[in-house]
Each structure stands twice: as C-alpha cells, then as structure tokens.
Length: 90
Image (cartoon, rainbow, N blue to C red):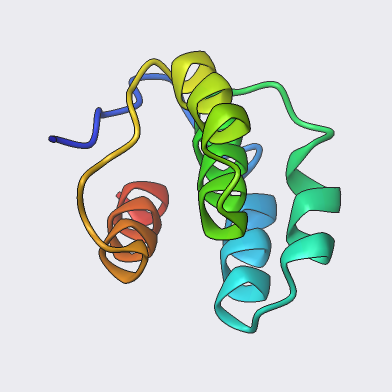
C-alpha cells in the first residue's frame, strides 16, 4: 500500500503532528491521542488511525484511515511510523 500524499499545506499543524509522533515513539499514546483528536485534517486522521492500530482496535483504526483517505497498511507499525514522519517533514 502506498501512503497517500497530503496536498494541503500542513505548516499550521506540523509542530503538533511532530509532537504527537514523538510521544508515540516514547510509548505515550494517550498524550499523542489528546493532541490529535482535537484536529480535523487528513494527517491528524492518519495519525489517529495509527494510534488505534497500535492498540489493536482495527475497526476504529479503519474508520480513521477512511477519514484520512487511505486504508490500513500491510507494513509493520515501525514502518508506518517512519512513513508518517516522512510525510510530516516533506
């Protein structure tokens, strides 16, 4: 599955996305969720989906992947973390 490119400008939210991803890497999923759940962007939805994928909540993850305009990937959680992080920094 190819990670979709987000065509909108993310500059207003980049810091929040990066903070959430750092918290995820530090296994602070609830804190990351607190940041992301208040945002209504494709990237926030993708990160939200990823958080629910980590938890093993496939139904909820799939809902958020649909909101992000994509589907649950077949890659590892680590690979998806890297892919999302690269998109944020692109």
